[in-house]
Picture 1: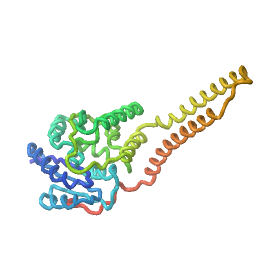
Picture 2: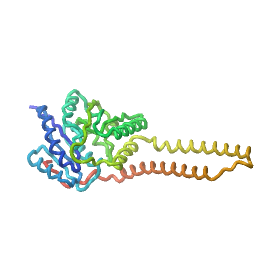
Picture 3: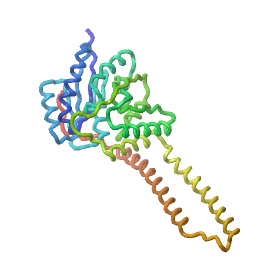
Picture 4: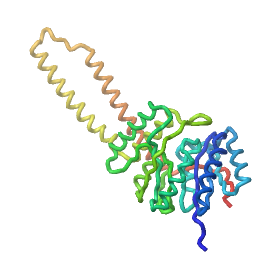
Length: 314
């Protein structure tokens, strides 16, 4: 008799004490409709401080299908979930957030598309109950990133929620990414892909862990990993500003020669020009710094996380 295929539901968590039990129950209810598969959970806890670990321990004690990785410290919103994702070992891995904004009920659609032959099935958010202003900013970001990366299929509205076949998991583990941008890697690696759309609900419990700095970090990681356009803009901007400066200088010279006694240059154009050029220089120095920082992270080759404890991996 052939063994059942195994599906691993992997999710990173940080201070999600009220969401983990509901996530567990809703996922179990969905998987009851797929008795042909074995399944298990893998929670990657990023050093929670609100009792999340106690909840996970209790679930793992009563259900050996619940596995857990407890980090020794908080390793950030990118590295910790990714470590759990590539650690998961199954015929398919479902990657999702544990804040319930990735609806567990969508797992059924993901599995059906996988059964139809797709190696990667991604959940794409086409509507949201959250802030429309933030959603507009996200769409603008994905539009810019896609334009800056014409050779890659950057997916708008995709946050990583999806099902990934073992073949894809074997491929992504070959990438030595100490600070990965999962959404871009999925487009880069390829494989036959299917998409399932959904409406993102509002967060029911707790508060979001994202702020301006974490969102900026993720946005710049996407650009640095998948586009050289910001660096080349520095060259183009230097050429354009230099050409404009020469034209302005010629224009001032002509005006001065015509109205020699009445035309005064004044200090305002000089001061404005100095501040403008200074701002442009600082902007592109910052962009170069982002790329150097990414290189520095890659060269140091630190582990994704330091694990303090594993539960039910035996």
